[in-house]
Image 1: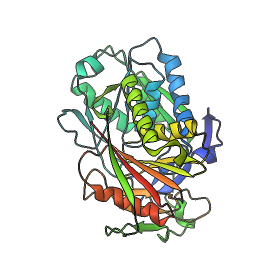
Image 2: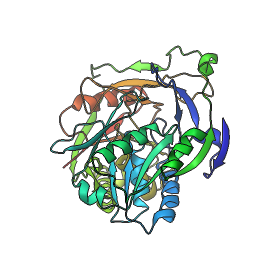
Image 3: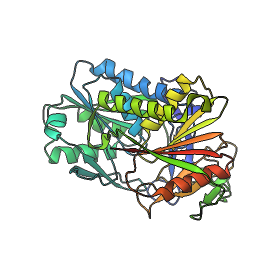
Length: 387
């Protein structure tokens, strides 16, 4: 791996780590970012600071333009929200999704060809107001390798009349590893490229042969709940959904209100001298990260960590330099037969699971709660954010 540019405070080895996808023939590896609050637990303050670094670069470049920010599911949903939050209260934010959204209409479908789940969708409550009237559309990803997925998306938006000749386009990511031919394709289309880290990387299929992938760090969670597991599940109103497009100020205020309600419900004394974990679910990341940040800030607790469940299957291995140490297969909050995973669970004194899954599936709370319980966490709260 050759580092071309690094605008972050992190050494490359601390922010880009390589993992092996599980049974993916299209792309056998992925970059794991330990600061991104997805696969690996991290301080919420550190995650938001990283995302805001990208947002500030974009804001300084496009502050005089009416921009709409589009994040990519599932890993970049939180990055997109934090980027949009740097632009100001009237900025629209949407993220793509693989979910079905009730009472909403899909405006485009496109393919993320290398992914474990290839179909992506974009909903928007008022595409003419949000997209067509925008001056610039900014696509936000965690990592861009070839840029093909974004080009598929742009092509779909053009065919459906949502990108016009007047539009200016930019893409932004934490990591960019596009090769010269991919960069030139974007330059020829007059699409601006932004990133925090630029690398050159040529993947070799035998890279992981030195590691013994014995699956010793992997576990499938039982659907039979242990009687010792005690957890409470609470619904809190006020859900605001960026899957259908939101003004970022409305979304930020809703996330703040959610955090305040949860902290008030728990009681400030219950955080004292504890290791706290806040977990989001799949695409639902930003509200969990923001909750962790508010706990960290208000309670002055250093031992707060956040990350999220994911649909992405990754191999676990106990090798010293390998980032994914343990893997637990869980019931999804969104679809009963879907495979969902949580990586790098550790022991905590208190865990808060936050989801926007709207109906039923309390079993999913208990499936994740049981995984936490078996890691030593006995104090578990489930929060469902509802409309």
